[in-house]
Length: 108
Image 1 (cartoon, rainbow, N blue to C red):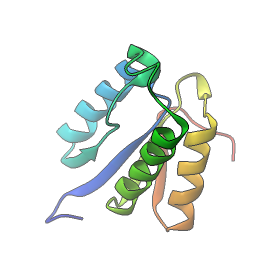
Image 2 (cartoon, one colour; image 1 turned 60 degrees about the vertical axis):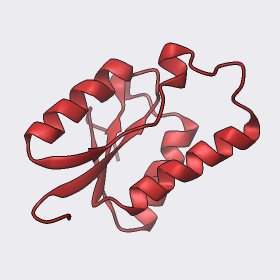
Image 3 (cartoon, rainbow, N blue to C red; image 1 turned 90 degrees about the vertical axis):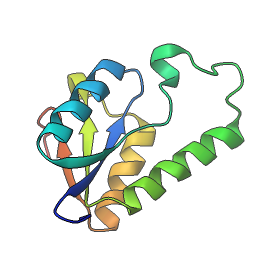
Image 4 (tube, one colour; image 1 turned 90 degrees about the horizontal axis):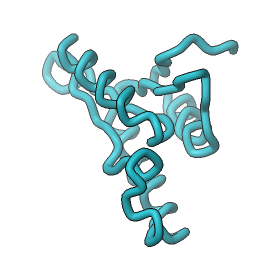
């Protein structure tokens, strides 16, 4: 919490740009501080040809640091899709005792 506001990091495939933006708006209007991704590489093709393995590793680590700053994560799992990076972020959030919420229900 920062003051009276819960901090939530959005996680999920960056191909779901519209869903990220919608979740950010909704969660913000509910009185949360929302942390999102730095770029939508899959949706926009941003930096598609220049994302090296080293940059991918850095971006994944940066996102885990965002999770460190958060009270919980909100997983954008449109069509119940959860990719490998998102699975890793969910596992990390659970390991660090963060609450995990989902856009769509999951079978646990």
